Amino acid sequence: METKLTISELTAKVVEELTKLGYSYNSLCGFRSLFRRFQAFAQSQGEEFFPEELGKKFLEERYGCTVNYYLQSYPQGTKHAIRSIRLLGDYQLHGVIIRRIVKKPGYVKPPQFEHILTAYEQECQANEYSRRGMRSRQQRLFFFVDYLALRGIQEVNEITPLIISDYVKTIFPHHEKSIAAILTTLRVFLRFLYQNGYTTADLSVSVPKQSRYYYPSLPLGNQQR
Image 1: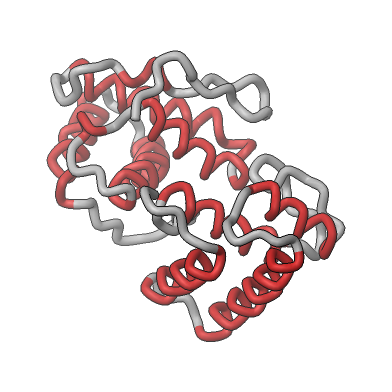
Image 2 (image 1 turned 180 degrees about the vertical axis):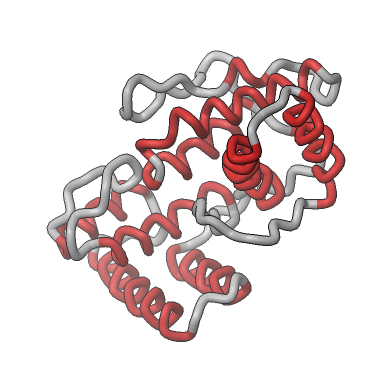
């Protein structure tokens, strides 16, 4: 985000976005309550803004949570607190609430990407992928496309290595064991875009590589803003 928000402004924006996304009244109350506790903690630390280290310190001191909450599983009893702090970090970084990968029927393609997704589906059919394989590929791909739409991307030539890296950061903590398949799907799709003239650069080479189930290294040398 271009303008740095204070913690008070940041929490208000996050609640506003959660309301727009249709979160229940009880869920919103839970987030507001946690955010109030975090704001009080920030004030006690003399902090007006939200650095990631402050979020980690809050979780450690108030919940005994010492894990890296972007890279590791939630310890028992800390899920709501970690999720709340992650929402603040996500919104500060991306300016949107990142939707997590869940199965959802009746997917509606963002209009700016509809023709490309249709072309990619036809390509997969021409390569005689199984129906089950097609569904899995589409499911993994739809959430990347959703992420692009949330970031305000209007055409695929606006995708950069930095956007790809940011996306991987959002999905890894929730899908560590399936990250290899997710990255492969993303790599194949980006290669399709380049080979068919939709992008001027082969962004498939910017997709992070994974070793076992550890956090994948992110491309540094060719990142663009």
